[in-house]
Image 1 (cartoon, rainbow, N blue to C red):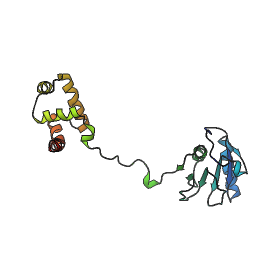
Image 2: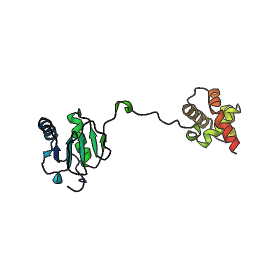
Image 3: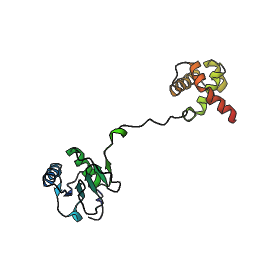
Image 4: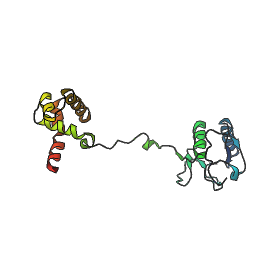
Length: 187
C-alpha cells in the first residue's frame, strides 16, 4: 500500500510479518490474529508491516520494528520483549500514522515542570492588592483604595496565597517583594 489508511480505527487490518526465525514468526502471527487482524504475505497491500529483529523488510509507511534497535526512520520501535498488548497497540497506532517508542528506564516518567514565575501567575489586580498588603493596609483599607468590596479583597488575597504558596499576609509580602520591586522599577 502506498499510503497510510485514513481511518483504520480498530478496523481489521492487513499485517505483513517479516522474521528470520520461524518460531518467532509463528508467535507474532498468533499475536496479530488474536488482536483481530489478518496476515498477508504481500507488503504492498498491507496496512502495517512488522519487522522482527534486524530482518530486511520492504519500504512501507507503517512499520513496527521489534528488537533493541535505535532506528529513527522507522514508524514504531518496540523491544524484543514487547507484550502482545504493546504489539497490538503499535499496529493500531502505525496504521493511523502515529509513531510508537517505548520509554527507556532512564527517561521514564515526566521531567520536572519548568518553574513558572509569579509575575506570570498574578493578575494586575492581584499585584495591586499585594502592593497594598506591603503597605500594611487592612482588607477594609484595600477595599477603599481600589473601590471594591471587602469580599472581593478576601478573594484576591486567597488567590495570592494559593498562587504564591503562602499562608499569611506577611509571607505573601515577603514572597512577593522581588516581584513588587521589579514592577516598581519598570514603571
